[in-house]
Length: 272
Ligand SMILES: [Zn+2]
Image 1 (cartoon, rainbow, N blue to C red):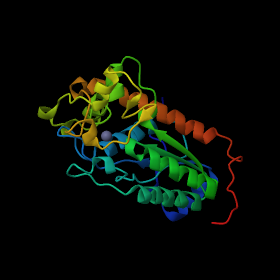
Image 2 (cartoon, protein in one colour):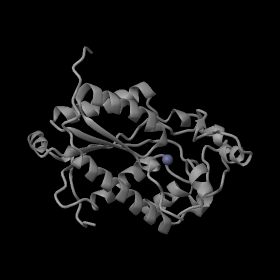
Image 3 (cartoon, rainbow, N blue to C red):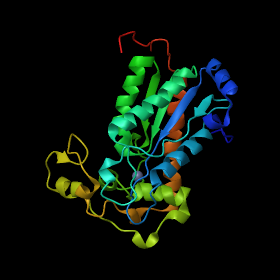
């Protein structure tokens, strides 16, 4: 692990400096977040705080002089599943796709060929997938989709049931917030609202909120309070462990993205 922080912030460079970046064939990363309800115990910016915290920690785990260019976080994402609760900001999915695509176009215009979409909100997964393929097809960009919640969690960190059912505002998110932004937790609200998915799994069968045959869900379908999972299992020590783990995963993804032979990825010339 390298202790010094690698890469540059897109917004801190001048246009002239940014042009020079293309020569180095670096990796751009676009953090995708959300501003949405996380129950009574976590702030609306939870997904942004976690995403930026993981990326910051990953920057300290990259090799020296790693050419990483960090775009400003897309704070508001596709959060229509949380719109029944006050404070949620959400882009319609078509708009979210177009916004991600527009940022990818700017990356390509700057002469960069590698883009990592680093996503910290489950609801952004589908729009990121679509935008990534559009950018690949139209511009020949290599676009890697890194959803931290899809990285395998560290062994024995939480019960398997919590990983499966604590999808929103559960132990994992709460623990990472305890580590990254401890003052933001409203401890009096810590609880264990059970997910509808937990009851369905107990009965057997294939349907659930996630998995092999998932149904589209609004947060209130999982629990009327809008969050699920046992946030009481969270601790700052667990959060520190999770952040270190996911940051290491992300750093490895960034390194592999840099190493991937890119000349096979060409734009297709076709009528728009
Ligand atoms: Zn969240």
